[in-house]
Image: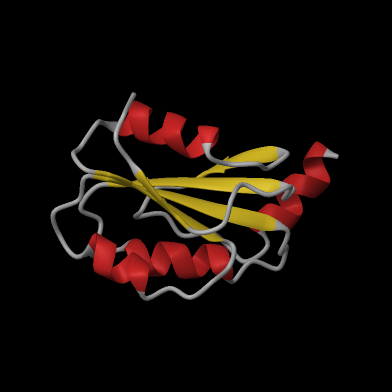
Length: 118
């Protein structure tokens, strides 16, 4: 069993669970998160897995007041695969969308992807 802290609401029944693993991503994290929160398609949850960051990643995440955000914190870096698996296990979306801390979503990304998948 991996030690972790989960902050935020329990997994819901959103159409999309956005899983975003991050390790020391302070430089780009705010832009990545804001691009998700600014989507035209609003039925999503954002599950961020802070994989043992030692920079200001935790502080940045603590300043984001959005009910769709859930943060999972690993006390030490476990690697990308473990972070992704933790995010997926702690999500409740019908679909999974993958993001990295240095990615930017175009505003209609989820709207277009859900329309295609339907």
